[in-house]
Structure formats: structure tokens, C-alpha cells
Length: 294
Image (cartoon, rainbow, N blue to C red; front, side):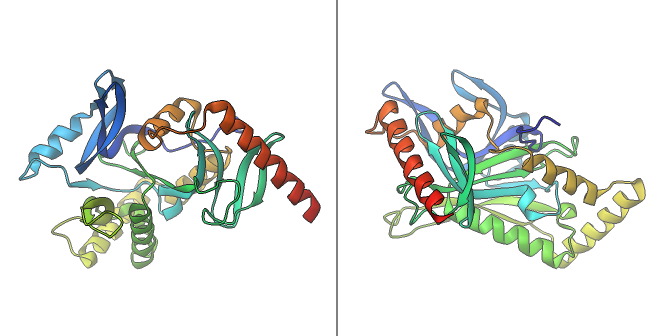
């Protein structure tokens, strides 16, 4: 295994709740009230739809894709959903610091350093630009049992809800999370911050028409069939954990532009050189402070 290369679950396509549109010569993300399943191929018009998008859309009464039947690949929730606080270079889409509120990995002038993570509210390095960032891998097409579709989000509601669901389902199923029949569900809510207009977030539930008890029974039967066939779920989880820990940051260079386009489309008053100068200044201050504490 190449050291420093984060080995992530194989991706067959993307799941989003919006799309890129052309406005005044700029490509901007536009929020939607439905899911879109795309391939990994991008054209001048945007991401090409995945064939599964049309299949599930036709099965919906309104032809709006608001639920997707899925399973997850791993029994450990944190392997399916990797969520952290992230500070990105908004010009390049490159992660500069990622942490969990206790510890972080930060790109400094001397390489990547492990430092304390105070969280986004009090972090001097992030200066209010650090935000939660989650990547959820799910399986839609059972034809490829080791392939997945990725959903990326910076929304608190989606990250918090998905984290809770994955942990709860793992607990009540006795660790059989990877065998449960699940579905992604789009939900709406309004708040004072949204000016009472609906905002949408992603939930993970048992598939419609199946009770939790019946879902657990199905998971037990599925798990038993897999064991009899020699499928080793524990080994798969262990291998995935080692692969994710092998790299410093999950995103590869070719994914930086995707992150920038989807989440950091806003214009920034700082140009690239000013931003880099501010980052280097903060790095030096934090390095001096960290050295003094030692």
C-alpha cells in the first residue's frame, strides 16, 4: 500500500440534492428539493446522470427522486460516514486542516502536524471558515457489492441526522448495520435562519413498508447467508479502516475542484496571495504557541 494515499471506498457515482447551473457566465450550485444520482463523468452541461437516476425517478409517483433504497458497506458507522471539521482553501478546494473537536491534522510550513482542535467556534486558524464536512458512502445497485455512491455535505442537519441513524441502527441490530435494508430520504424543515423557507437535509431510514423488527430479521438472515458463503464483514471493516488511516486527507487532488465548485462558489475578498499570506501567518503563530507549551 502506498503510504500517504488515503484508500477510500470505490465510487461508482454521486448523490446530490442540487445541481450546477450557469448564471451570468459563472457556474453556481442550485439547491433542489430532490435527489440526483450522477455518474463520475462531467460534461459541459454538468455531471452526466447515472442510469439508476431514471430508473428510480420513474418509480416515484411524482417523478421527483426523494427516496433511494440503499445499503451500507460497513458495520462500523464511522466507516460509512466520515465527518469532521474542515478548513478548506476556498480558491483551490484543498483541505488545510481537518479535526474532530479534540485533535486535528493541519497543513503547516513544515508539513502536516497533529495539533489540538478547539472546534470551529473558537479556532483562530479557521477564523469562522471551518465547517463540518461529511462524506457518506452507500450502495444502490447490488450488482457491485464493493462499489458505492458518495454523498458529500456541509450541512449540520444531514451530518447530525445521518450520524445518529447509523449509530442507532448498529446498536439495535446487534452490529448488523451492513445487512439492514435502508433508504436515503430527503426531508424538509424551515427555521428562522432560513427565513421560514424550506431547507432540505438527508435522513437514513428503514425502507418504506418494512418495520424495524422485520428489517432486523432480514439482516440476521442476510448475515447468516454471507457467513455461510465465507463473507468476512469484520475483515472488510478492518481493511477499510486501515485504508482510510493510510492518508492525511481523504480528498485527492482531482477532487479539489469538485469540492470548490460545490461548496465554495462564493466570491472571496482575499486574492490567492493574500489568503496564503494570512494562512502562513497563522501557522507561525500556532507553531510558536505550540512550541512554548511543550
